[in-house]
Image 1 (spheres, rainbow, N blue to C red):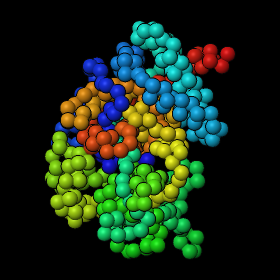
Image 2: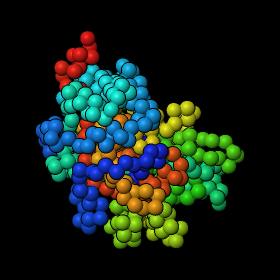
Image 3: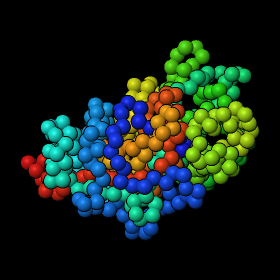
Image 4: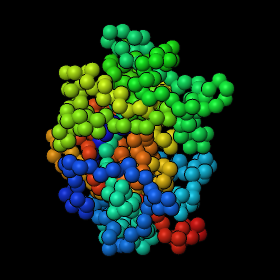
Length: 405
């Protein structure tokens, strides 16, 4: 699944008054390179001492049933033998990652007080911080949601923007799913054209899966990677990610900011929609700056919305990170700010699970918060663009031995 720099806020829980430990600088004019890759030999995670831990008590205060559901989904993924292929990573074994989720779920359920919970976490867990984009832990948190759109299998004046099936010549790495290019008739692999050239060529004609209202709807679905569609015949259709080209991703939000069309503190999906309705050609030209192109398949929707692990993602409890450098399925603590429906900043310090990834989420300085399904989640997502810090919790080696016993 994935995002349009439409970050997502808390949909089902009330935020507590805990103070975030990091400075949020979403209004800064000179933005850091949040997608800066790791240097050769550099680790994505660093263990931190207890005196520099985030406010885990605040995360305890924000626990709810949705966190439990999210933990259960991760445990189900770890139970599948196929999950073992992704470990070890960052020095974390499959066994350590799995038992960390199991034990944290148990401690959340059995602790009678915040003090007991904190004591147990300190005794049994180590905390690791993402090095971020600057080596000092700075992470940009945007967000995403699963949109609801109206659609039709037949093009018309009301439904004129197509979403396409995966081309037969799209080549991806069989293990990681990373796009490699397109296969030529002689067996060689060459890069795909960029979005602008691909759409102009007309070579995707005949592979249309479904039609939505306009190009902005189609693009929003592409960057989210999935959608629930309300068809013109009254039926529901579920579509999900089927692959993407090997071209680089450029967020529409960044293009809008760079063009000076919307102030950074006013950037939202609603603002982009208003801009599109006023001047669709201008926004379509910015959309074309994103060279990457996403393809779709239809599925039954029983597991919808699902992340890259194949398990359902949970509103405000699932996060997307770069799975090339971060361990899958684990418990994280996110410390950042979000915006309410009316635009006010609110502290967001809570446990989540690392269950998804996306085209825009690359390097240790980027992460996306899943905010839910439908238009309300989309509205909240639209205002999210804030720095923060990302932490992972893993059992200490001696605690793993205790679990095994």
